Image (cartoon, rainbow, N blue to C red; front, side, top):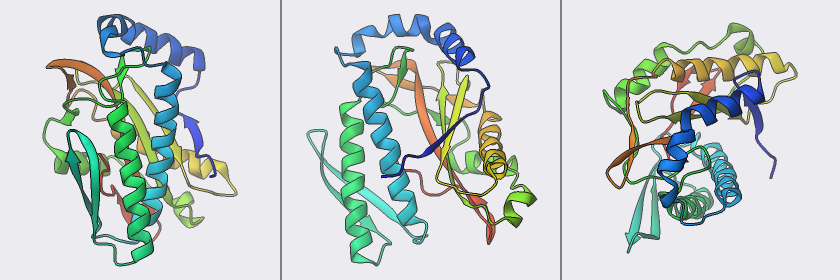
Length: 238
């Protein structure tokens, strides 16, 4: 499977590490008991797998605007996945398998933090203060689809990974994408545009919770650029 092209939205790796340790160092110590001796490498590996799963899902569902899904759980474990709005049997089956694997991975990561004190899967997910529809409106109103990129036919989905901290602010953002273009600059501009639109919502979030305690957590929001229509946010996969 082709690896997603990663683009960091800040200029210095040292700055990232320093900033994350500064912001989350105390939190990492505070929530150390949640890790349950889980190796950091295991969490990072599973998060990489989750990104691959999301990429597979969005490649399929872009052709099915009515796509929806529900999980059937038993004792907290995934028992079944029901996919609707996908009339191709092969695509529907592929989605069921990938969604099952994604949810299983997230359950394994539940309430475990990385070395920065950031949780990947939590009891209560961070929420935008004014709700999902308002979040979509705010992101899209701040999103710019560069004319140069559109004219070159550059389209696809940007996955914006960001941390919402205990104060509802966004101290860290990175992006990955499945876009391809003979001119990298056009892809870079769209990734930057998606990141900036989400960064503009910083401070307007209610943080995640683990065992009734507010924590920093990682979120992923996909932003799709399509030359035939305005940018949009596809169905969120939770």
